Length: 453
Image (cartoon, rainbow, N blue to C red):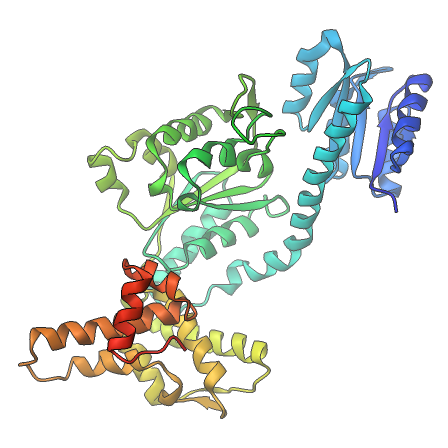
C-alpha cells in the first residue's frame, strides 16, 4: 500500500525525474507537474497529500503556486524546494502556508525525514476535517438549550462573535458550558472549515507549556528529538480555545500578548518569527480583575483578550433552563442506553429545581445520565435520583438544634456523594475534587458507610 500521494511541481524534467525516482523507491505514489496550472489540474482529479514545489518555476513563483493549491484544497501540505542562496524566499513561503523547505542540492535522507513529519501533520489535518461536519451540526447555535433571558443574552453575544474574528473572553463557573459556547462560535463562523483546538492550561506542566503552545525545534530541550508543531501553528486557519487562561504563568502571558499584538510567535529554540492566522477564544472560572490587582495576571493581556466578553451564568441563577436541559439529556442518554424514557415525574423535577447545582450543567447531565441508567419505566422518578438531591432539599426543612458535628457530617456526606457521582465513582478523581487525599476519602466513606457505586 502506498504511504501517500505526492505531487512534484518542477519545470526542470531532469530534477523532476530524480525526485520522483527517489520517492517511488520509498513506495510513495508520485504525480508530476511542470507548472502551477498543471498542478491545479492534477489536484482536481487526484487526492494529493503533499505538494513538493520548486521556488523558481518558468513564469511564476512557488509561492504563487502554494497560494493557488491551498485555495483549491487547504488540506494539502506544501513543501518548498529552493536553492541555497534563496533561504529568505523559503521563509516567505513558510509564511504563505508551506510546511517546510528543502535546499538544493537535495539531501534525500533529510528530505524523507521532512516528508515523514509532514505526513504526521497531514494525518492530523485529515482527522480534523473528518470531524468537521458532525461537530458543525452539534455545535451550531440552534443547539443552545435554554429558556431563560440570561442565556438568551449569551446566545445573542455568541452569534455576534461568530460574525467577527475578534478575540473572545468567556467567563463563568466550572460546568456552565464555556467550552460549548466557544465551539458554537467557531462552528458558526467563517473559520468552521478550519481546525478547532482546545488547550486546558493547567493540564500541562509549566516546563512544557511553551513547547505545547508555540512548538519547539529539534534539540531545544532534553527529549526534543524532532521539531514539534505547537497549537498556535496547528490551529492556523481556525480557532484556538485557551481554557482556564487565569492559570497561565506570567512568563507565558508575555508571549501570548506578543502574539495578539503582532500575530507572530517563535518556536522554542528558534529566532525565526512565524505567523499564524488563528482566532483566540479564552475562558476562565477565575476573577481576572482580582488576579490583576494581585499582579498575577497582566492587565494589558486582559484588555487584549476582553474584546468580546461573554459571561455564562450559573445554573442556580437560571433555573428555568433546568426543565429543557433535563428533557435534552433524557433524550440523549435514552438513545445511548437503548431505552424509551418519555420524561420525568413532577416530584423528581421538583427535586432538581430545588437543588443548587454547584457543578452546574455538567453536574445536571451526570445526574440525568445516572437516572436514565437506573430507570426501568417510562419516566424517571425520585427513586432514580441520587440521595444528595433529597438530602439538600430536606436540610432546609430541618429544625434548628443539630450539633455542629452532625451538621459537618451531613455536609461531608453530601459533598462526597456529589464528588463520586461527578467523577464516575473514581475515588482518586473525587478526592482531588474535594481537596483531600484518596486515603482520607476512603476513611470517611468507611465511617459513613458510603460506596462508590
